[in-house]
Image (cartoon, rainbow, N blue to C red):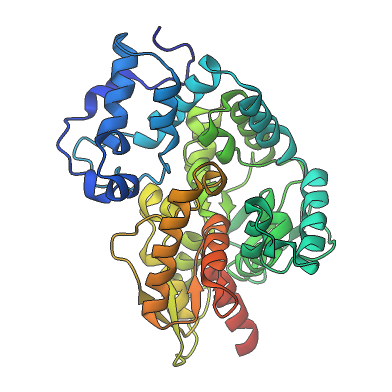
Length: 406
C-alpha cells in the first residue's frame, strides 16, 4: 500500500541508515527488550519495508512504532545523521491516516483542540487540584495516580497570555515567550521565572495572546493536521520578535522543527531558543549574575529533547552553578526517564520501568533537589521519587536564588 501523506518517512531518510548498530546501546526500548524491532535500526527497516511495498501499515507496524519513546537518543550517535525523530512522526502520521480508530480520533481531538484551549486546560487543572486535595491519586487508577506527579496545583489563577514586560536595563532585543498549554496552567512559576530573567537580561518580553500550544504532542501522536494548524497559529503570533523562547524542552525542540509543519516555520525555527540557552548566554555575558557558592548539591536530569534533540547539556549546569549550587551528574548517557508525553499512559509498563531506573539514579546521588527542564520529566520524577525530593526547573532555582541574594 505504501505511504499516503505528505509527512511520511522520506526515502533519503530511510536510505541513510547503514545498519551499523551504533544506536542500539543508546535506545531505551532496545536496552529493555533486546529486540531488533524495538531499536531505531529495526523501526527504520520496518518503515523501509512499507515504502518498498513489501509490508503494510498494519497493527504490527503500529505496535513497533508505538513502543518508541521518540527520545531521539539515537540521533547524536548516528554516523549518517538520520533524522529519526522526523521519520517517526511521519510514520505515526501514516498510522493515523491508514488505521483510523475511534480512540485515535479522540486523541487527535484532545491534542489538537482541547489541549490548546486555555479554558479547557484551566477546567481540567481545577479538577486535578480538587483531586489532589481529596487525595484521589492514592486510588489504584492509573490516570488518577499520575496526579501524584504534579506540583500542588492552585484552584484557579490567571494565564500569562497577553502579558508584556519591559527590559530592566540596557535593552538587547525583544523576546516572545511561548507560555505553552500545561506549562501555563501547571508550571506558572517557571514562566514567571523566565519573564523575570529575560527582562533582567535586557529583553522586552511579551507572551502574545494569539499563541497556542506548540503542537509537539500532536506531532508525536501522528495528528498531522492539528500539528500544522497549531504551527501556523504560532508562526503568526510570534512574528516580529528577535527571539522566541520556550520554557519546556519538548516545546523548544518542536519549535526548532517548525519548518516541517508551516509556511514561515523555518524562519521561526531560526529564532527559537530554549530558555536555558538564553539564560546561560546572559550569565556568560555578565548580563545576569553569578551568585556565591553554597554547599548544596543538585542532581541534573537531562530531558531527551534538550540533550539529544538540541545538544543542550552544559547550559543547565551553568545555570545551576551560577545559582550557587553544585551540579551532580546522575547519568552520563542521558537515558530517557520514560515520560515521553502521553507514553506514560499508552505504554505504562515500559514507562514505569524507565522512571524507576531514573529515580534510583537520583537516589544514588544523595541529592534531594533535582533540576529538570521539561514538565513531563518533572512529573515522572515526582511520581517515582515521592515528596522527599524537590524537582525544579533550572531557571526556577536560579531566579529564586537571585531573589534571595538581591
